[in-house]
Length: 401
Ligand code: F3S
Image 1: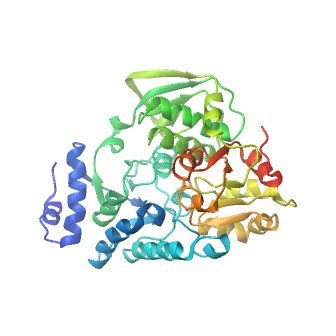
Image 2: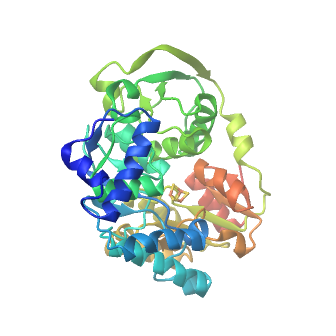
Image 3: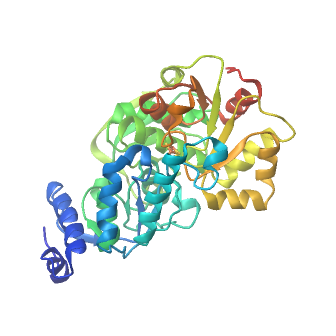
């Protein structure tokens, strides 16, 4: 791996222990993946925030960097935390957990990272442009940046994203390269795509079929931005997919030929298998979770209009960033949601919060990724369907097909 003079001096420890350690992480990663050099990046999204996942070991890891006065050189935002940092008490989160969570967010802030606590940083000011190189972690955000925007990032882990933020560079391999972005799996979609959850269901099937491959979808109807979020998040969960193209809709599929030689071709003529996989819960719904990935203003407005003048029977949380919640409040939608008894919950989500301690059996959601991880990590059963089906479940306590 070729290092510039300055990079070599950092590697040799001439700019201190913190920078040396960060450079060692990047060089080790670059050597594993045969990167020829480091490439400057425009922004970083850092995952590894929830105390539920980090625990004491993660806390100590972060303390080391703060104690050694680590400061990021790159515009950096933060993934969701394990609690709503302001309303944790009224939402029922444990005090000790919430205090540990705030402490972790404070550690990140001390390093100069903006405590956005959202997995949709592109909605609130960390919005890259086509072709930008990034050092992002958080699988759904990586997928969105690569696919919808046409920016370039590998799927960083928490430590490599932090190292990239400190150095301002990342190893140049994988999705940073033109040839690393070509589709090696083509999906001809013949199944009917008629509701918002169909994109998440499609993503589950495509992710399982490609396994870290790069899909190109043909035959999809015109998509809304939130459809891209759901499709990408599902594929990231079921198959670690970090980049996909949609024929005629994503920017690279319009800019050049994105099909790799020797690609595989698949036909998807039904989404039934995905709905079967994601619907493991009973018809009695205990809790409804929307906003995975974190809800945009458009999604909040859609749900608020469904709830207007009605009352929920079981708890409905719409998870989003504080910034988006502030906008929703300014335009009156937060009030509509809260009048129905539902809640706009900030900074966290049902997967990275300790939902298993709430004692729910069946949680309904419109997110394929949410189902995937709630089943695996949170020990709850799930009901999966459109935003409208989820709102109905919140109003009645029952799941209807
Ligand atoms: Fe975001 Fe949590 Fe879903 S981090 S993508 S809302 S699992």
